[in-house]
Length: 501
Ligand SMILES: NC(=O)C1=CN([C@@H]2O[C@H](COP(=O)(O)OP(=O)(O)OC[C@H]3O[C@@H](n4cnc5c(N)ncnc54)[C@H](OP(=O)(O)O)[C@@H]3O)[C@@H](O)[C@H]2O)[C@@H](O)CC1
Ligand SMILES: Nc1ncnc2c1ncn2[C@@H]1O[C@H](COP(=O)(O)OP(=O)(O)O)[C@@H](O)[C@H]1O
Ligand SMILES: [K+]
Image 1 (cartoon, protein in one colour):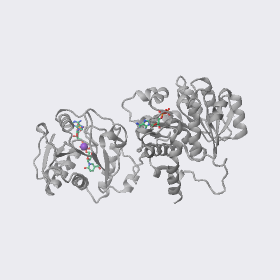
Image 2 (tube, rainbow, N blue to C red):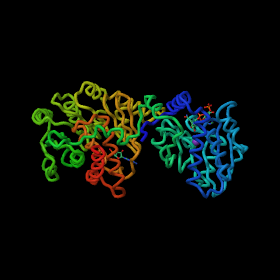
Image 3 (cartoon, rainbow, N blue to C red):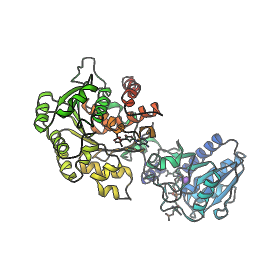
């Protein structure tokens, strides 16, 4: 699988390098691209009464002229509409010259039920909101409910950020080339694209590999090599010991969800660290998971020295305030061999007045540091980044990770995982069933469980997000957070088999 996500600029660079390397020139790549789209249109819409191809002035329009020619050659009734002339002597102008159909002005565009639309107005080169005749065409197609096949991207959607720059086509299918772009996975782009088909147009893997791409689809190929599988001679503490800090007597469930998820992920031992007044409540609900009274910093330090735990989850149900800050600082400052701290929920909010204090501690910390904010929590720690409309979600998360000296999991329907070194991964398999109370607590526990087993922080975060989503999708309707740890089991079994196979 091809896991790189190419920005429009990286795609243009790949295009140039492929042309330099041959055997295809720009026109050759455009013919390949158009042929791939025409094939998909014929395959998916064999009964189309008419295909309307809408061409813009750039190379996206150029692909459209190739599609129109090929469909017409296959005997499909085609109407060709253009929003403007291609630049003289461009590949698009050559493609228009090779097309036997004469384009009609887009200003007069109309279509009937039973037609299919090929959107070749704008792709990677979209530079401003779609307006005028193009916006009217978007509106008309949407009012008629006609199926849309988008070339590269639905016109109006940014390939870089997935944002809708004004009106945009809602495609049933988007055919893109060489590699997906971030905008195919980021919201709302993911929804506007419909199904995304990837076509090989003759840009080779070594060319893509040479680009130094830093943005990836989050899938097992990205992290499987680091996925922990216990050796036959292991013992429970070698499989890692995770600790989840519990809140007070009325808010203990969140920590237990984290603890259960950590245990399912393969950590050999898990302890809930509980305030004294919540010990009885926790004890009533724990069996394989251990319990220890931890009311203050001294008790935490004693535990660290005694038991050498591997990773911590701090935040779910914990309460916002000084105690959360003191515990987070104690774990980050620990020299006792702790492998990681996952700061979630109230743990994040506790630092809203003093994020720099947290980030400075993380910069010097031995434990790996992972933050798991949803949008609201992200804005509490990184208000300037959250408010900056120019940033894509991956760039926002990357800057946050660099500032925090930790891995950031920016949650949501299009969760992005970013590392301080600039790597970012966009998760493709989320589903709305995951939007249920406590689901994030399970995710935090999973990350800690993988950290405890020695997985590097970026890979652990990516693996946890993917497994969490996969478990949620497979369970489907009716999912509540309690179901997730058990639903992880078949997902884990497959990953272990893939890793060992
Ligand atoms: N790279 C590759 O490997 C391959 C790429 N291929 C194809 O090329 C496509 C990229 O082509 P591209 O760079 O020419 O950009 P494209 O999307 O046609 O738009 C640029 C033109 O539109 C204009 N314009 C933009 N927004 C506008 C707006 N809202 N309203 C009005 N005008 C607007 C913009 O004007 P400007 O911003 O310059 O003023 C410029 O004139 C890519 O998506 C793929 O389909 C394939 O052929 C195979 C190989
Ligand atoms: N619409 C959605 N599609 C896919 N995943 C979602 C969606 N909404 C939320 N999620 C996921 O569900 C989890 C919710 O976490 P969070 O907001 O912290 O909830 P809680 O604090 O109740 O556990 C995150 O992993 C998030 O990515
Ligand atoms: K398009």
